[in-house]
Amino acid sequence: MTPRLEVRNLVRRYDQTAVVDDVSLTIAPGHVTCLLGPSGCGKSTTLRMIAGVDTQDSGEIYLDGDLISDATASVPPERRSIGLIFQDFALFPHLSVGENVGFGLRKRGAEQRKRIEELLDKVGLLRFVDEYPHQLSGGEQQRVALARALAPRPKVMLMDEPFSGLDNRLRDGIRDETLAILKDEGTSVLLVTHEPEEAMRMADEIALMRRGKIVQRGAPYNVYNAPVDLAAVAFFSDINVMKSKVHGSLADTPFGQFLAPGLPEGAAVDIVFRPQHLHIDFDRNGRGPNPTQVAGTPARGIVERARFMGSESLVEFRTDLGAILKATVPNVFLPKPGTPLWLTVRRDRCFVFPAEGD
Image (cartoon, rainbow, N blue to C red; front, top):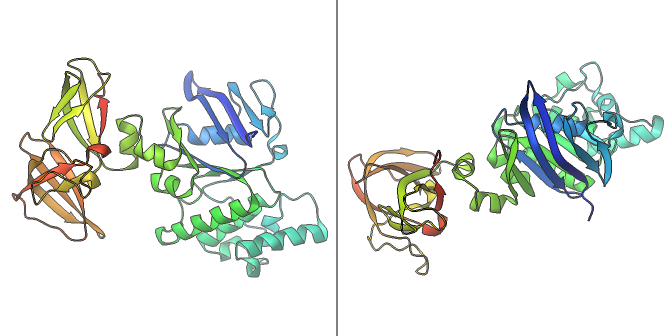
């Protein structure tokens, strides 16, 4: 199947610094791809080049297999069949809701009015067709911006942090509504965000970006559970890190030895796991809930502090070797500082990486 959107080896430099450095990605028809990464990593610059409002130094952009941009020639933004939704919605304050939605439509009269009403009905705002943007809430303005971007029936929708300005109480509902409408329209989506939860919630595929490069691509499950390095684990959640060295392809830890295949003798390694995979082993039997999944050797931890976080408790421990480890425990669990408890860790949820800087 020909990708709806394909980006090949995109490069953009400012003052000799590659802000976007050899970025390649594809989006299938009707799919949602999320460009995820910290602020300043090149996500929005990539989006602007795809939209045609910025020009790459090298690389190519294809839409349905047709070249729309390279370093020497470029199809104008208005002819690319690519929609764009910004963080601030960018609605025209002097135009009504209906006029905003119809702004990019070439056809006028009854056909234009029909498309406007169809989209406003789809986003639940038909009753506001003659109102003005300042009369709407932030969530309603976001839906108007979506309707306006969809009006010309773009093949691809580019979304740059579109939900970051919304109240947390509204954000999840608006995201789900937006995704349903885009899927219903059959529009391919490239969403830029720095929020892992948003990417996991919306994307069919995540492209994790760092310092101008895509460092990992895949389905949300795979990116989360098979990270390429420590930074990839840490971007999605809080982490625990244990330091060790390789001896005979094994690394010693308070929880026993971990395999470190392919790493040279004496190499420093980081053993990384998430707080939800550190368990309190009240029986000291070293086993998890499934007897076939050995949780490893129990290690003693002394409670440093415990905090109730709402749906779970966060407990910090100091091991006998001095490492600080965090565990998340469902509901309320607030042991007193100084309490000794035995801990186990799910080995199938641990990652072994060469130590950073080595």
